[in-house]
Amino acid sequence: MAKRAFISGITGQDGSYLAEHLLDLNYEVHGLVRRVALEEPQRRLSRITHLLGRITLHPGSLESYASIFHIFSRYEFDEVYHLAAQSFVAESFADGFSTIQININGTHYILAALRELQPRAKFYFAGSSEMFGKPEEVPQRETTPFHPRSPYGISKVAGFHLTVNYREAYGMFCVNGMLFNHEGPRRGHEFVTRKVTSAVARIKLGLANELRLGNLDARRDWGHAADYVRAMHLMLQQPEPNDYVIATGETHSVQEFCELAFAEVGLAASDWVRVDERLLRPAEVNLLLGDASKARRVLGWKPTHTFRDLIVEMVRRDLALYSGGLERAADSVGTGLGPTTPPSALSR
Ligand code: G4F
Image: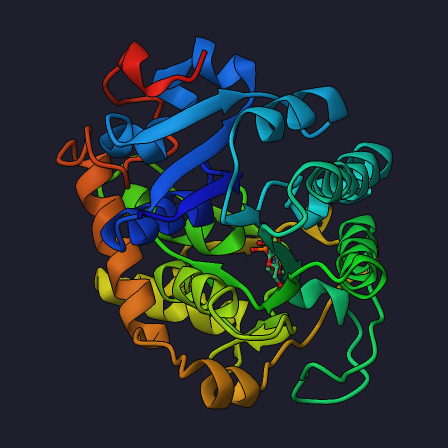
């Protein structure tokens, strides 16, 4: 019988790639969406438009235990992937209260409802390299102590510990993926990689004349989201629940990302990039570099995209998008374009 999976955050970058991956593996895929998304499907469901005939969407909210409980009381799931969160670090400084409330309570609601209704479901929590923050060792691995530098990072540390606690206290199959930055053409425009590649495309096409950024010296371990969702699935196929770092093992600066992205269209980053101090963060994570050797050894996982592949794919997609060639693709995210949702995709 086909396995049934539930994804919170199915409308996001990772959720859309994970849904595709699970459908390819013949899973029955369900997702949580905010009711407001159903009212504005063209904009808010654009990453999963192409999947709508094949998945079941449940209106609900991470802020409402009742809505989560209701879904889990109607459907039994083999695997639950909890990806939804307020995931933009800069926004977490602007409104730390909302980030902490949604990210911590949302995780707790899902775990508590699972414990009550289906404790045998396997649970995946989207942890983050932001938990390492000001890293106490380089590279960071599963045993590296946490030192979060933002309300977002703090909320992810709390989610990590909730996940471990449900595993230890109630014997549930709960795992943490400690994922380093992962990107792709479906990335939201607020994150630096997509901000850069979309600006490169618009500058090349004469639609923009500068790119304002904050800290160009920050270094990240950037992988491709399509690779990282495979790791999420593999974690839930193991005989025992455990926590894993997922990373490429390479670190690059924002400056390097810009230089390669502009070079892809024959331009020099130094001619177009301006530093805007208003985009600096009150506390920065300066260097992230992951050691995913445990995932390689135990899960047999490894990334298939290089740093350069990632940049080239993102720049080319944005060039196609802004020159009008990609209006209906999943990767046209952020433009508000895309067909409407067939009502058959929605659970009632
Ligand atoms: O792209 P970012 O906003 O990603 P950040 O903060 O590393 O967080 C992302 O990765 C985490 C995994 O480690 C996730 F948990 C999290 O949800 C998110 O997906 O910023 C990357 C770096 C930062 O150092 C930032 O200061 O780029 C620097 N940066 C420089 N100028 C900028 C900008 N970031 C953004 N978003 N916008 C800028 O203009």
